[in-house]
Length: 349
Image 1 (tube, rainbow, N blue to C red):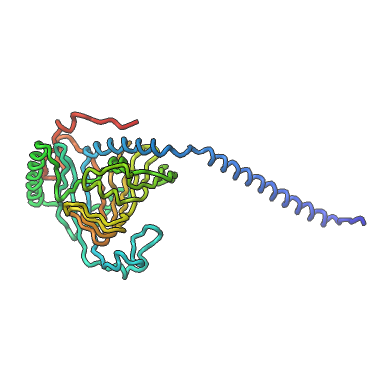
Image 2 (cartoon, one colour; image 1 turned 90 degrees about the vertical axis):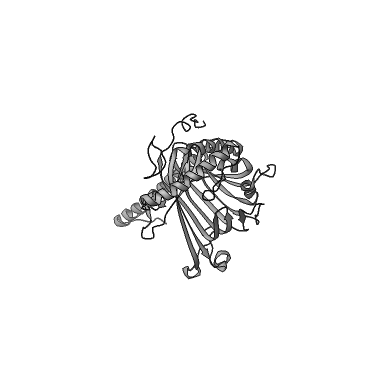
C-alpha cells in the first residue's frame, strides 16, 4: 500500500527528523568529549614512587625546619575540658570520620583554658614568650585560615616576661654548653615532621587538590624496623593516619591520625589515652617553606606543660621575618645577627 503525505505532514516529518539528527549529533559530540576527558585523565602524571616521595619530603622538611628560625609568629592555644560522655560518647565526637557534634547541648564545657605566645629564636634557642590574656579583645583574621589575637601588651608586662625569658635563655645556654638537652615548660620540644617521616612506613598513595595545589596523600604507621630515641618519638609508635605532601614543594601540608593504644612513657611528662585524635595543618609561608597553621586535638593527653581533656586547639599566624637589629615587640631583646647568619641552608632539589 502506498502512503501519501500532505504538505503540512511532510513538513512536520522533516522537522522531527532534524530534531532526531541534532540529538544524535549532540550525543556523538558528548561521547567524543567524554572519551577525550577520559584519555586526558589517563595521561595525567603517574603517582610518584612512595619511597622517593618520602625521601624528598624528609629533605624538604629538614630545610623548612632550619628556615623556621627566620620567622617570628604568634601561637594561641585554647582547650575545653568536656564531660567524659562528650569526649568519648558517640553523639559528641570531633568532626572526623563522618561524625559530628549533633547537638551543641551535648558539648558541655566544664573548664576553658587559653594561653598566648610570641615565638622566635635567639642564639639558635627557641623562645616562647607568654603574652597576657585580654578578655575584652576579640579574635580576628590575620590571613587565609588564620585566627590569632592581637593582644595589647604594656611595657610593664613585657618587662616582667622578658626578665623570665632572659633567665631561661641564660640557663639554656649553660645547658647547651654542657651538651645537655634544652627544654622549657612553656615550650615543649616539638616532634619534627622530618623525623616522623623517617620513623614511619607509607602506603596507598593518591592525589588530591588541596587549596588549589596538587597534594599526595599517604597512609602512615610506625615502621617496626625503626627504634625511637626519646619519649617524643615513642608517641609515634602508637599513632597512625594520613599525611598530605605537597606535590610541588614536597612540604607536609597536613597530618591527621589517631592513637591506637594508651601511651605513657617513663618520666611522667607525656601521657595519651587511646582514641585521642590529632590533626596538624601547615601553610606555605614562602617557596619551599611550610609552617604551622593549626593543630586540633580531641581526647585526653598530657604533653609537658600542656594538658588536653576534651577539645584543644593551637592556631599559629602573623608570620613575619626577623629584621636585623630590630625588636620583636616593645621591650624585647634584640635579635643577634652573627650566629644566625653563619650558615644559610639551601632548599633541596
